[in-house]
Amino acid sequence: MKNIRNFCIIAHIDHGKSTLADRLLQTTGTISDRDLQEQTLDDMDIERERGITIKSHAIQMDYKEDRVDYILNLIDTPGHVDFSYEVSRSIASCEGALLIVDATQGIQAQTISNLYLAIENDLEIIPIMNKMDLQSAMPEEVKDQIVDLIGCDREEIISASGKTGLGVDEIERVPAPVGDPNAPFQALIFDSVFDSYRGINAYFKVLNGEIKKGEKVKFINTDKEYFADEIGTLKLHQEPKQVIKTGDVGYIISGIKVAKEVKVGDTITRVENPAEAIQGFEDVKPMVFAGIYPVDTDEFEELRDAMEKLQLNDASLTFEPESSAALGFGFRCGFLGMLHMEIIQERLEREFDMTVITTVPNVSYHAYLTKDKETTIIVNNPIDFPDPSMIHRMEEPYIKASIITKADYVGPIMSLCIEKRGELTNQVYLTTDRVELTFNVPLAEIVFDFYDRLKSISRGYASFDYHPIGFREAQMVKMDMLLNGDMVDALSALVHKDNAYELGKKICKKLRELIPRQQFAIAIQAAIGAKIIARESLSALRKDVTAKCYGGDISRKRKLLEKQKAGKKKMKQIGNVEVPPKAFLAVLKLND
Image 1 (cartoon, rainbow, N blue to C red):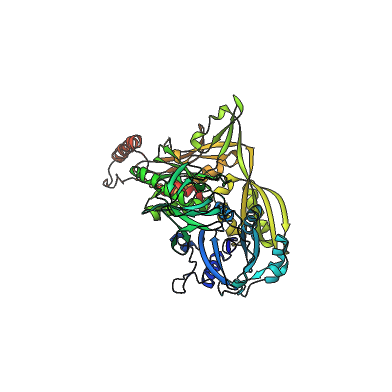
Image 2 (cartoon, rainbow, N blue to C red):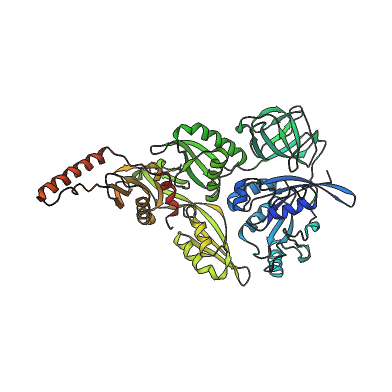
């Protein structure tokens, strides 16, 4: 056990975590030069295309130093704020963390929030300055920033480069795991994946005791018992072993077929000599809610299947069934952010061939009624919005947003945050050129296009991180969209009273561009209750019925036009308007 080292890599997006992990794999000889490809651990197509890590990846490496064999278990983590749950789970199964800072960009928002996660779990922090081979590296400035943040000595900071392999040999100081090899077997599940041939593979870290192949194990949270058909360690490919000892990381295959039976954060123990449950992870709280519906309503069961398998791989996804008059049966899903939602949608299309429609994302509000002012009613969906005459007050979730940017972009970023109903609470100059701005902003304003606009006004320099700070009272109204007087429930949204008129006007204009013209006129309206607040009209397609009249009396032409008008009127009564799938998501891109 004293020769095992468990550590993870934490950093902001694009600071070179996965590239540095490649160098570590190469240095320890875990992977041959022939098998090596850029970002070897990012094995999903979508990760390679976008150049981001979505899923934590665990891998074991063997390393020899001073004639001692070490076993290194490395977990590469995502850097984006939407995947911070992945990071927190990885941190729980490690004793040390490599904090990577890009020498060209310095410390950014996600660097700080991931660092705090690691410090809360008492991890040994090893600061590493990456990308030292670049011309634009600023080693002295970045070292000052790291010293201010962690309070370490300048000599402790390792200068490295994921591209050239500089400084990779110097990485050490990770403490050995602690645990009692003679105690009852106790292990923490930190991840799981679905294999269509062998069922569910659970990844775990042994805290006490050891497990042998073929033993009967029990999952404490779900109270189910299984045989350990196969156990092993996570090399580049799974490597079966006869026994896994204290402090090590491995996988277990026990023929579990049902996704609900494996819960991340659960404890595995032996049936004969059970241990106590470990304090697991707190259940993840979704930030953004949206409806996901199959394009073809017959595919509802296939979608349920796909969602369950995805949830196994991504524990932060939550969903429950719901139905909509416009879209049929589907699911109300909870996501950690907009990127998370986009990734889930794309993974459903790629991995399960499911084409889905996503409704307007929203957040969950608290409503208090006049007859019972103390009881909280949670409103996740505009359809659940109570009758306005019965509401005593509404509360919406607020977040504390921390934005780190170059000093030149402070003005535009402040205007953006104030436009989103934000309040500036703090402004700190980290260096002469870098500012940290702290705002309290309603979460609902961040959901739409905040992140994209922040990136475009700061030319990609600003980094953004947030965490919830509770609920505050707000004037919320339910805005419905009507097509020829019929409500489209999938386009309803809960909006702030002050923004309703402007938003209603924008959505009507956008729908006018997207809905195809019919043989009859279409009225596109935004309404709050019975009051119409915005309207756009889509004129009918019409045939030129008077083309055959050359000269002649006007009454003949009028007769033909009146006949056409009567036909259009009848058609409007029986015709219905099909809303194209892209219209549901166009609401998000109102500023394009």
